[in-house]
Amino acid sequence: MYRQGAATTPAERTIARIWNITLDRVTHLQPEAAGLLRTLAWYAPDHIPDTLAVRPDDPPAMHAALGLLTAYNIVTPDPATQTLAVHRLVQALARTPDPDDPHRTPTVITQARDQATTNLHTALPTTWTTPDTWSTWRTLLPHIDALTDHTTKDTDTTTTDILHRTAGFLNNQGQPARAITHLQRALTDRVLALGEDHPWGPGPRHRPVRADRR
Image (cartoon, rainbow, N blue to C red):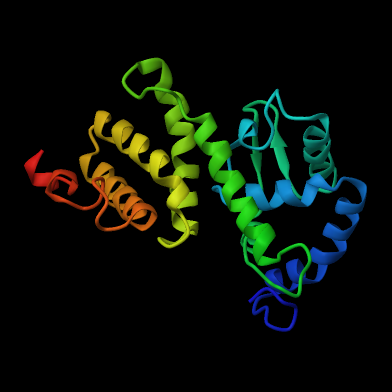
């Protein structure tokens, strides 16, 4: 879809034309920049907490990479909210594998997805029952949903704990139907990772509870 000849809209054609030129340049200047962009591609396009990009304990190169992406207008920061934005077409391109594009080989796309999952997991509050964590949960929720939407059930086994803990928050907030959806996806992930016969597989004790049986 995102190769120049296959792009269907003017915006897609523009993104396809400038992608390799820009990524070649920023990677030459800062090798971590392309990987950081691929990581940000797995989240919602707006209001990405900057902690999902770089954290205080990250090496200086990662902070420099974010600065470079900002300088090239690939990432738009909002200092007032300490969040970032990435155009959704750039995100879609950055997470779409293309073996002919050195910036989007299946291997680096998988690495970026796993890094996005790790960063999100690290950012989760340790609990969902105390009110002082609720604003963080609400900030992260769109990005949890985006990560889940962008992954398939045969590739997202690393999101199990994220989904399980998010279900706890949603249930605490009076949203049992959404909580059950996350629990069902988490169960599917666990079965894929551990197998049908594992004690934590889909036996009677672990089947999701129906919303009308809360």
